[in-house]
Length: 278
Image (cartoon, rainbow, N blue to C red):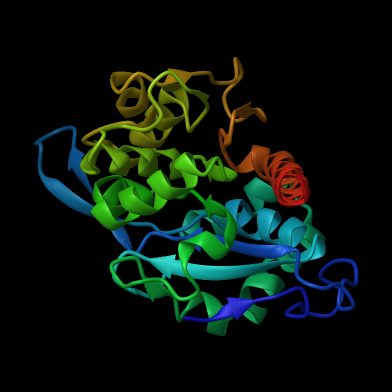
């Protein structure tokens, strides 16, 4: 397991925070899937579609977390090396802003040794869960293949839920919430309000692929009693915060999502210090 701190930044990536002391640790959980199964619409044939984590949904929150002085600890279900979804490298997601795209890719490259040596969720975490201030789960279609059915992640999320620690998931990342169904006590987020990659947005992908997913993240969350809210206009920014849970709809929400997560972390730490002094 490796840890990225505010000193782990490529030159020019974002503002200098090298003199900051650590504000706390954030667990970053990435999918170990490099592809997901789809069914071709014409003949129901199963195919594999390359996927992984979505660049903006990992890089933009990381920029904000590192600037705020947080340490990042990476994990995947079995310690697999995570894979970037090739679709997330498209200039379309950056609206021609090459500087932003290059900045985010530079950060991911600079943290490559940390990102590519994650600890397995099935192992006893070092440092222990009690030492973390929050958890971040980016999207990409990768989480649809593993995070929602990982019992170890279910235990981890239940810890953060019980302790009311900021829990941030974006795009397809919220599928991971379903892992808490595998823990004694059942689904932890019934009745919560959240957002995620919408059915309307997913249908556009399925048309592009001429294939369909077994389950859409919006449908899966609704079936478990989550109050799902999505943007009226597909791909428009949408961030929802309900108690300790912070969710973002998709790539266009990544910066606002990261800002909301950092604010929640600050509020959590302030409350924790107030409780200690009381």
